[in-house]
Structures are given as C-alpha cells and as structure tokens.
Image 1: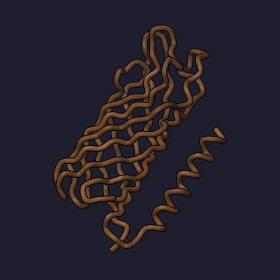
Image 2: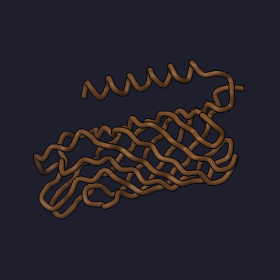
Image 3: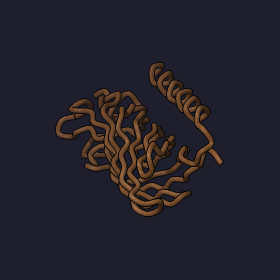
Length: 187
C-alpha cells in the first residue's frame, strides 16, 4: 500500500511539473471527467463508476499525447456462493488521441499500468488474494468540441489468472460511457 501511495504522489508531482512548464498556447489541456459502465464479463463485479484526470498536449494538429490517471470503482457482486468485494483501479498511463477535425469524432487510448486497490481478498467469504494490478488499456471513440468530450470506452486491467476462484475468473474490465471537460492551459 505504501508503494501505491508513493506512485500516486509521484504521478501528481510529475503532472504539476509538466503543467507548470508549458507555454501559453491552447495546445495544452487538463481534462477532467467522469465515467460509468458495466463490468464485462460480470463474474466478480457488476458495474463501475469513475473519475478521469489527464494532461494532453497537441504535439501536431490532430494528435494529442499526454498522461492519464483517475480512479474507477468496481462494485462487487455475489456469484453463486461467492460474496465478491468491491475494488478500485488507479491507472498510470500514457494518453494518445487522434482528432481528424477540430470538432467531431475522435479515437484514442490510454495504455499503462492499472493498480488494483481495495480489500486484500477477492471475496468476503474466501481467502484468495486479489491481484495488485496489471497492464491497463482504455480504448475509446467519441465526440469532442473545444470544451467537452463524450465517449464510449472499454477499460481493462489484465491480471492473468491471479484472483481466480474455481471457475470464477477475476475481472477488472468494463464497457461504458464517459464525459470530460477540457481546461485549456494558456491564453
């Protein structure tokens, strides 16, 4: 748990450093948003809600690169006799966005590492340890204008076979929708 706190602190300091070091152009954005969806497959979790925070720089017109983090809360669900615990995913990821036009549809993904946080056990009535995290991806397609982004997204933290109990595989993936607000860093 101490290493996760250190990682989140380091990400925050890195974000502040990147944001404060940028010039006054409109190519730099801080993006803040919310998302929600359904766990897929829904073996150990039913749904998810989350917060997204990212920094993006348009390196060339139509291509944005940056860093992304946030928190997604997965609601545990009962599956047969297992009372699965809630858990969260905190990503530390690179952000890539493709904007064919100044407003309209866009494509993008976040890719990095997803830290899984919460109860140390997969289920309240089982001793199986939950995974600590894994490769994180979040591809999305959406609509954007200067201020807002609306998206359909899939997020997944790959855990291999860690956290599996019998036939129930441990899942930290969801399909959902998101909305984000762009805060320009500049004039």
